[in-house]
Length: 89
Image (tube, rainbow, N blue to C red):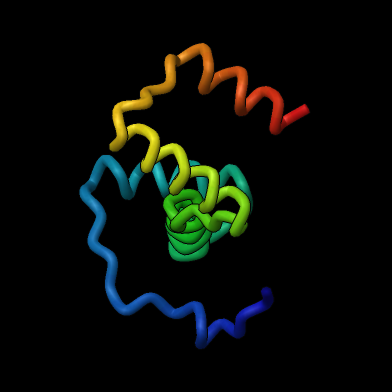
């Protein structure tokens, strides 16, 4: 999604000297300003930390597993691995 420069403006970010120097080095190596590099790096990290979005099928499988665990039916690590390996295949 493209944003105008005004939409991307940072309110205020304070970096320690070592972090600023590293950001400055990386930004220069990539032809960016420090502000642009910090914005890109922070946005990428926030996207990585974004909540996981599950399909209704995935949410139902988790709810079923939780109910079974609460009832004392516990899965082994091997069973869990086999289940997810089957879903990925």
